[in-house]
Amino acid sequence: MASSKPQDRRPLVISGPSGAGKGTLIQKLIDAHPNTFKLTVSHTTRQPRPDETDGISYHFVSVETYNSLKSNGGLLEDAMYTDDFYGTSKAALEEIFERQLIPILDIEMNGVQQVKINSEFDARYVFIKPRDLGVLEQRLRGRGTESEEKIQARLERARRELEFAETAGVFDTVIVNDDLEKAYVQLERFIFGLA
Image (cartoon, rainbow, N blue to C red; front, side):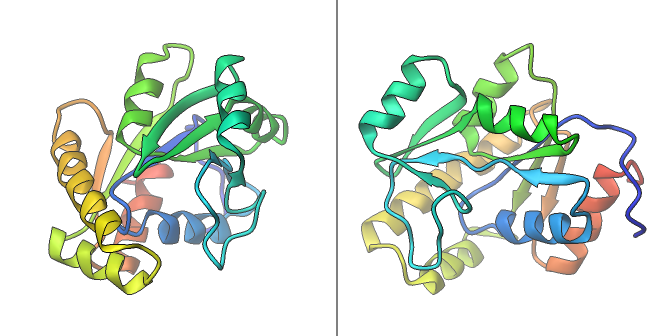
């Protein structure tokens, strides 16, 4: 697809269970349209994985720093996920808007609920789901970065997220990521108004 700009310039909220392929699809979109989209870099209190870089993957912060940001109204949304906090800062969004780019928020179910309640934040909502939970479990185990306890917690969370995605009116589109290229084409067609 040519690197035209989408008619709809609202931020994109992309959600789905951990391991569903959100990050891969988002990166493909940004790589294909680098002067159009920018992923917001969330704050988290979890430890970085070996391949992650502070300020690029996440802003890795202490619980104290995170709580200070939250109590000062600096977060659009935040949630606890497997004993760690995650949140999108309003400053990160402003920086993307100032660059005239479309922000992409990669957030989970609680964050989506919080953002939907915020009437000042108008966005488009996409849910990425795996073909089934078995595929998701394989992907999570394949990472080799999680304990069995965290894998089980993520799978239980995924079950709830899949139920949430079925709630009428929450998401503008639901994309099944059982074939990366096919899922990417669906995502791009939705964003550029070709769906």
